Length: 193
Image 1: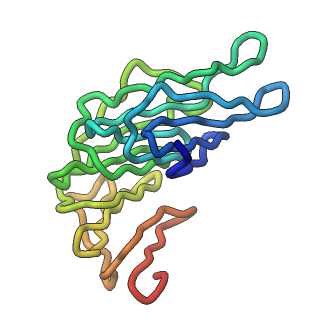
Image 2: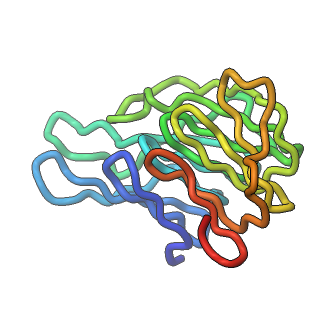
């Protein structure tokens, strides 16, 4: 099937196909580009920055980085993603230097993806449950803060040292939330905030 969504980061572009499969394009070390499949057939959402992460149709999460080249400089035709340990019930996902995803109960789970940058591999990625987000339907993260948009269009943010997620003052009716260099932008009825 055709591409349903694109993600760019980690020096490559990956396409989430309407079938749930993922294909990526990355530069070859000696020049040109390589196209390779990611060993997934059931992806529902895709996010990228320093690595790629996806939620699957079984509501678990996986992540991958640029595959390490072989001795001759070629890239593999297939990349094996790494399962996020203990992930279940995950829906919305976002990636920066960390990755975060929310579950159906509104709990935010975050994990470190820095080991995957530049072709690294890890045996598994542990997740850390962070309570205090209710009804999260969209997640946006930066290196030191995670924000969610809830079903009412309210944006709540939490830094690691915070005791709880706090609503962003004066921000309501948000339709879309994205992390950008140095902060966040929100689209709400009537335009960007």
